[in-house]
Length: 148
Image (cartoon, rainbow, N blue to C red):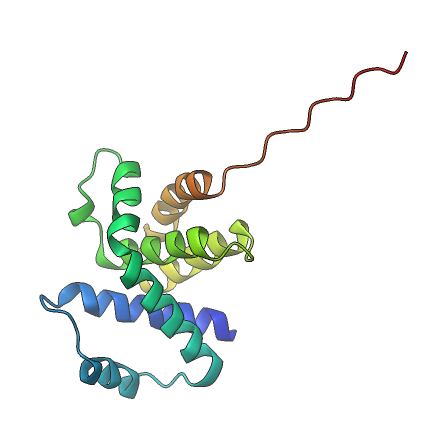
């Protein structure tokens, strides 16, 4: 696996654990998380960037996801799925240099690896809606008028 995939996996695992805690994790708890995970260097730096970004923008990301989850309560989403969606939504909104299809494909793969049997297809459906919201396609150029 690549460094970015490793970073995304670690970020989702951290965010999953963060969701299960009722209080905000301390620096000591974060250090303990990294003691349990063997990723180092660029992958860890990337994971830290993702974690910090998602936590900083979590409320606004959650609103975006809540608006798109139809006939289902946001709180009832599987914790893995919810955090994969948060991570991808953060990347779509705050990492414009990375193409949306790359973000979606990575999120779907992470969901398949860490989530349940339906996680990949569920995340895929919601992420397409999120991508359209954060990265709408630019309008098609108008055809040039015919030259007389």
